[in-house]
Image (cartoon, rainbow, N blue to C red; front, side, top):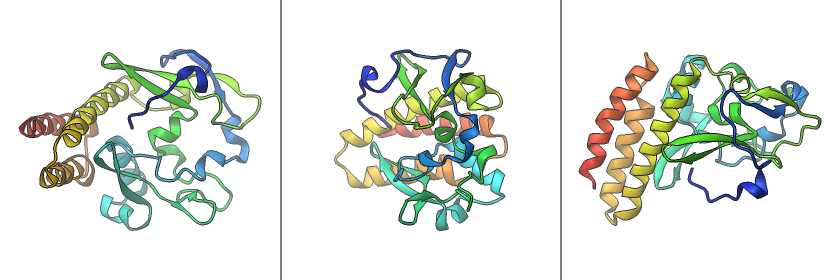
Length: 220
């Protein structure tokens, strides 16, 4: 999601790499689930998130669409997000004790919180959102450990590719006035990167990305 932010207002003023220490440790939340409520449609899923959900739950995109995820337009592109439910808008994956039932394969957005990413010059760094997490007395933890993602170098390379590809696709959607083109492009991207299941995620993602980049060029 493209946002205009002032790091001075929302962060500690530092930028972090995956091997840096950041004050985000929260003792595994110790029963707190504040960040899993009232999030609206902001927990946006990328293709890696979707793959992990499908394999972790042994299900399909279509099944998840029944009651666990929903679709919204983000910067002109249709993308899935986690569904919230009830009066308190609790994440659909919170159990009765207020704990995450998909913690081992939770989405990247959830893993990163309260960190965010800032993209510059075809790369990104992390920043700490100091007003988002209410847990007191946080401890320092290495960013890489906080994320807890296997093959972190592959993952970060993928994140960059996906971000800048979406940025290009979003620009095309914003510049065109043709509703048919917008619809066709969105349906193609949704099917190409989300609906079709993955077996070898990184290998198949890059194959699909190469094809999609050629398709997107046709709309320029």
